Image: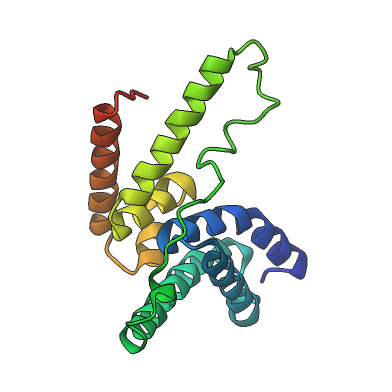
Length: 188
């Protein structure tokens, strides 16, 4: 059974990644924030008594379900209010870096030139754009496996699919990213 402190620490540890993952899916920062907050509340209310080891998988599943619920509500709103363009707006001006945890000003890169810094920033932006362009299930599997560092079984449970499907989605995502980045002249 997770203590209040363990639950709080867990939520703090996943907050930023969950937000970014939601932004990739819904492409609206305010909606993503609402989805993450709703997911966190549901986890605390309904599963706060579960063991701490189960919280990551439960949270990923809740986050996925809340995201799907958001898309369903948007589809309903568009159907009801199809003449209002407000519901079709997409915010693509996110000012976050996909790999910001790996690139910090305190890195041992003091001697790096402005050209190198600019090039690295452009590469990260390109990677971010290519991840955002992946089909939804591929993006979801890729982010869970390689960003959230969940194993195949956890990812399958969170996505509600088989382990084979997770492997297929991840493989396709990696190949698509590799191909797109190679076409842009970026080799990692």
